[in-house]
Length: 310
View (cartoon, one colour):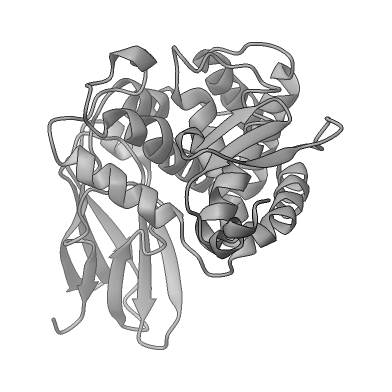
């Protein structure tokens, strides 16, 4: 490390590198190679992975240096072990790597929400006419736009988070690790990733793959009305977008207790545009909110919260 780089946080690079390898080995499977090196390189190399080495260039503060080290180190799993075709399907290694990077950063920097940046980048692009389906060849994205970066990195990190929310932590991680186990030292296509998750989860997820990989449909659910009835409380939920997803609702009552009620995706797959959820009326319902944990890739959230008296 050059002395001038100490002001760029390079004095912490060995600590960052060790944490990255140890964390990713726990999250995925043990790192199999004899070493891993982060090199302080020229600015033009930015952050570029090679087997057992990454070249990192340019000014980096504490957050930025850890971010690039853990991201490039994560490439030692995808595609250095699970050899997907990055040129044809750029997302197939970058998205897993960005997702893994986010998990590590949230562990190392307690309370840091790197996923929100990916969410904001995706929403900004999806609100324009520049987004293209993720299955586009890596050379065919519109030049000079954010389409490639958002599709290959940000949207895919969101897709993994949504998939985890759908399947639950335990099933999601079993499927994720099984994908790696099946395809280490081999060359999986996108269908191999999808098939592994369906096989492990025991669920047909074709609607999910199509929605988020083959289309540019957007997700837009809204609370249309909340009303009291003699038997309880009715909540009208609208589907105003094209993307298919379940609707996660959290109902808060006057005593502070909460109740989770999901609208199944089959409701929307069946063609409904409005669905009524019924819950008990006591204790009184004081708030209803869609996806308060912000795990789904909603384009807008202005109709996601209802509060009594407002």
